[in-house]
Length: 222
Image 1 (cartoon, rainbow, N blue to C red):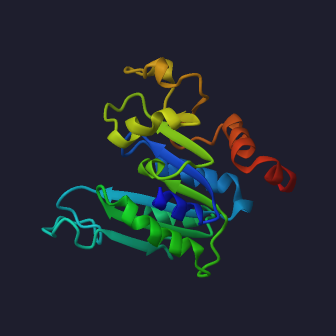
Image 2: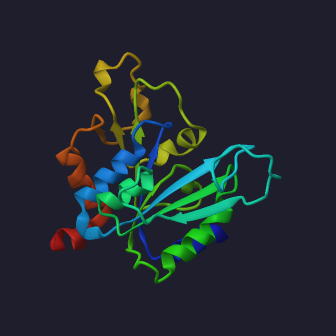
């Protein structure tokens, strides 16, 4: 696929953080991983796709034609702000970007993202952490982590579509203590790490990321 080839020219190692729905702590996991591996000097990216009638430029309702300003890319500069990308900068990311597209227009935003990451502005890191599920439709990351909350009924279509490609799962509460436990077949023998929001990353999750994402080269340096 042409778009996938374009993304591949970023020269970045991709770690993708997805999740079953909003408000399950996808950004929190990305922030924790950025803090856990400060030597990586991450370039962090949040991808948001808006539905019909919502503008990608400001997130507000609008009556734009379907293809008007379908893509917007912001570069975060304020680590003291309240946005998700501000949290990523505060955690130690070298750069933080927010790519916003209309639903179904992500492919149009990827060349813009590749161009920004490949530019000399700000010294982008070769280590790229992206918060998104839909990105899996265009590339295969080195590591794909999916955040689940057994007590949340909502499950994004994009999460269902790509969940079989997850390398590991992070659950926000113990499975056996949930009133609506996830079906065990969902995990298919892949590792499951329990990290309640606000708790530290489990040591075995950190070790898995170090081994599978960074590999021997990072282990030797860090």
